[in-house]
Image 1 (cartoon, one colour):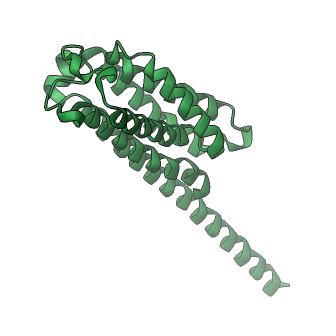
Image 2: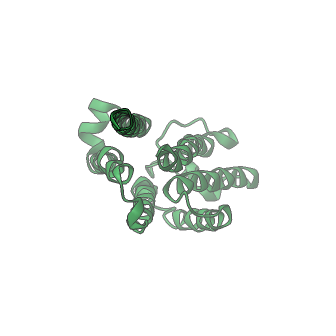
Length: 215
């Protein structure tokens, strides 16, 4: 029923919000302390963007935003985890991401890898009874296309994607679109199933009433 759809759909709304917070955190890192540069956070051309040069307040703000970023995305990938477990995972992920400090160009690939591995394990280990239409359509409509789009961005961003699709915009746009399409497909399928069940039940009732009249 729709409850299975909502188990994945609603946490991902928080994930999308966290995604936006993550972009905001990158903006904070670029602009706090009077840094007016527009140099990309994913390059090493401007050493002023290094974490070590930020004030304590800037560092704390950036870290808190990253923790919320990870918490929201992990909640979307692991909706059955408790908030305490997700908090611990968010702290670990934030620390792990900091290890890429000198090579921030790998951050996008790191985040996507963590989320897709976590989501895949969570989905594959679901009870067999829950591996239904909702389970089967999620990777087809959401996960695989999003992985493909992310792979293109990760490997072709300096050429095709950046120039033709404005870089990361196409990836971010696909996330809500993919989820909305998946939700609508599941909603229509579930409602159609209910209608068929209702029609079958009505037919059985009519046959029973007809037999009673004949007898």
